[in-house]
Length: 196
Image (cartoon, rainbow, N blue to C red; front, top):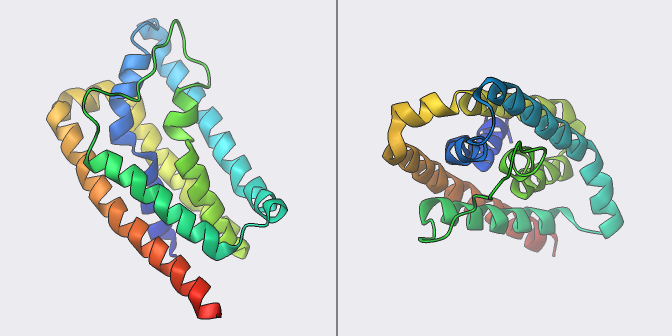
């Protein structure tokens, strides 16, 4: 996987456009003068978690005895389920959490930005090519930076695009993610059966 494709994959999985309404809703009870600082703090916490998982996720896999092909297939299945939820959201249900006061770590940093799907992709990248960790670090940083810009200007983004615009972008990102997920599944299956 190239640096550009890793950045795109991580960006799609984080789904910043889909998270904008959640950020706006979670911060509605926060003093407007503090909102920007809260967002920056939560984004930095998410970044630290993502970087920590990049380096400590691989030893965890070794302890659990999970093979590379198994992780690739599992990652493809997880991404496929996430993509399906982006393309076909469930009506009458929402992932939005009720928050009293100022949010801290949960749910903005985790799981809205540093969610399980992002951490699974990081483990997958490091499992396939651990020697390229500087590339994966750059990819994570770039995807996080792009996400941060969108989230920091979430209110303006929501107003400019409108709810239909946000939904359209999320559906498009989901469709791209479906193709990536299927490719990951096929790659994992090919690696596994090719060994036999």
